Image 1: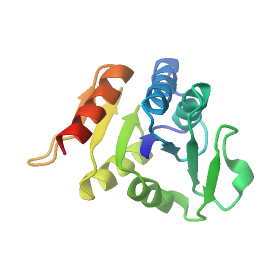
Image 2: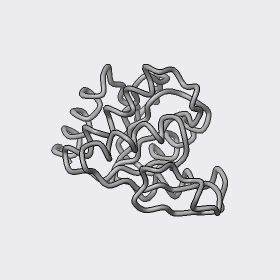
Image 3: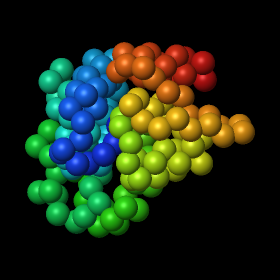
Length: 154
């Protein structure tokens, strides 16, 4: 299961939303289950992309109302944890693709790196650390290709 994370604002840059939708479709086409925070913006776009090719989508919600999930979710987990749901989402996933940038996205990337999960960021911030860099991608295809190569190397 691969988490696709990014801004939840539906007014997010259309280029970022299009990239998220492509990432969701590419992941599902490659046989990955897609997990998101289940709400709007990048989460909806990635979910829509995954569903467009027959993929499966898991929504990990911050609240306790399952009806808050976007309409593309197959499995809805209402955590009631607020931003703490970021830990559940990342811990439940094998890797993270971040699309776009927001403080919530940054927290998910940081959690993933603390857990030694592979992370690639598309249309986001460039982050390098002394021993745990976050990869950056130039396109949705590049992000999924990086992820596939990372899993092949492990």
